[in-house]
Image (cartoon, rainbow, N blue to C red):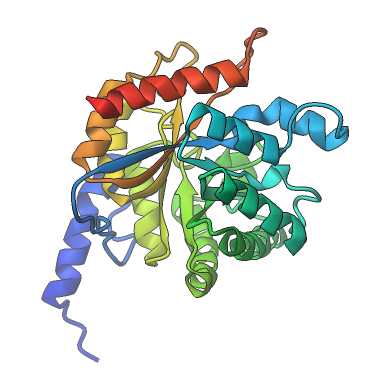
Length: 324
């Protein structure tokens, strides 16, 4: 076997260096360079709504069908408010984490179609930062099962976490203080297995930054490089890059994004400013992104939080920024 590096492998390694350096990662930890998604025709931005915005009302409905709202009613709201799509989070399907029966899936799909809505994505919970192999395997199995649900819904992406989940507060605790490189390997191996399954069904595994293991754009891209699969790409959560200027991280990852979560606040600090929608849309447009921009509003401790009002307000802001 020829042990000398080829020009192609050298270029791939060279492409990794800026991301690894920016993230403070050891050089040479990944073997292939992630490449921007090929876009044609310039930016084309379509507002969507993440159902998680209705978290409390959806949870209330899950306990008592006479209370709150269900996913069908979220779709109705999206149509009335003139969203172009809806992201139907898996947590709010009956029986989650088990997959819903086909009757429910196709009823929801038909409702969205009748309302002129696309289903821009779905998502589930997983923890691939944990040292517990059984928990990682459970997450892989769950994502695989819901990939098939996404395919039936016509959803092009399924969101997956790259960060720790309760009962753990951070990835170091979840991993038993394993090295960052070891944990990134766990994540990449699990996500790659999911992506292989996703390719069979035409569903992309979209890796979400959540301010823990993935708290910078460089870390986001480093993980994608290690996964190295065409059906694993970035989901950019604009409120979860924990850096001095999250817009820089958003700009870095935007060329690799297949979906988004547009948050009301930018960054993770307690005093984070409200998202500058015009600035954000300019960054997204400059990346050439074509696709859905799901917004997600959160109560964040607000006693007077009303998702109907907050989502409509954010949509107006997003549409105004897109219009410019």
